[in-house]
Image (cartoon, rainbow, N blue to C red; front, side):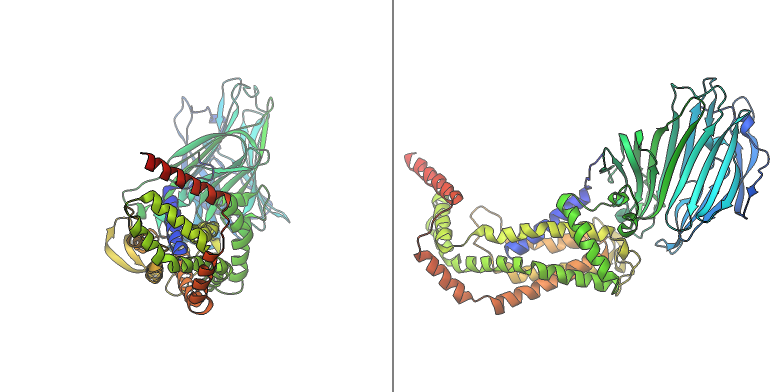
Length: 596
């Protein structure tokens, strides 16, 4: 299990972003079912029902040869969903999201044919095992003012029956499912609970299987609204209690099972489906949920809802049970920033202008809001540049005495009213914002399928050239927005390279050259990432360059800062507790050195 856990690539990405912005801010068994087999299927309809297809299936039965039966497929539809349900097993054989397509512009299926299975099993005290997946059901469809209802009934012995009821409202992605078993001969065995299991293989819907798989995982809500997920990086499983819902999240689309009463116990599992060529995969992950159903002596009943639709915050937050928590907003403050700031702001902007322009406007707003922090950082850098000659002189004077060199350097900072940490603090203040954006862009459903300039889909990479080979960690194509963002970072680094806060300390690596690797690292990491995020990053760095030039050439007066530092040196400087402690430690270290 992982509780809001991040996969390794996300960690690498966040560390990379952290490094970049620190640098920028710092430098800027099988049942007896013979009695349940129906040789013919009678369909009772109050309204016409669409029969889509028939197929021949085999019914397993102990001590008997397989019996050939014909299964019908019936369709329920509303404004956004088309659901196909087979009379063999009463399972959904197709769930199509209307008016949506996948990366190949084919209809978008959440369920199609055999990628999903459902089974309800129970045992009587007479030793009979019933499993719905082997049963043939007689359907009855009715249309009501609220929508459509499909009832599927199969007999159990002489008087009993089991019934599955699907209720699809006229609107929306959420629909009802009910299981009722009545008149069970011999009653249920109280030592063997009725079992419910639901398996589903997640289809690939996006251009990059590797990228989509990173955000495909099983999520669940349990223990008083505690949201958690299984690992997205590999196989994982967990035994749970008090489960409010289980979500099979396929990046931008989710299949969520919502019981009327929380599952007292449930086991959830996910596993990665691998192929020889990952980018050619049809499926990404396989999910499984197993639980038990409440029952009395000779009956049981369970009510559920299913949500099958987009992983869209605006849609999910309209439902109860906090279904929107199945989206990975990020933890703590980062999640709050996304829910309360970036989602509402981006929704507002994208409702007025195209999504690409909305990203640019969002970037401008973020940079303007954070520009005072950038100004504080640049003022600190300017102070450090003024002090650089004196720091260089101290390094040369005490080059053989590191303790003394550090002691004198701290005294100089204190007298001048400057601090090397002042350039880092603004960067740390900005970190929650940039981490929130790192989470926001991959899960912003509004960007899916939206084009901008040469990018066909802002939620996927913007390929401008396909390579005849694959480069490790880079891929087999060239994305332009990450390339432009890397170039912008390079030029920003060039502009700030001469504004190092202080000369490199002896024995320390030259950070100037290390930071030049950041643009190359970003180019590799974000080549398969959402182009919307790379667009943001490119515009953000261009704006930072512009703001820095304005601050440097228009707002900041270098001579005035120099005069202020000289004035500060003349004033008696009262040290704070931290500075006093540091001075005492350095003096003690110097004294011990002399004694030795």
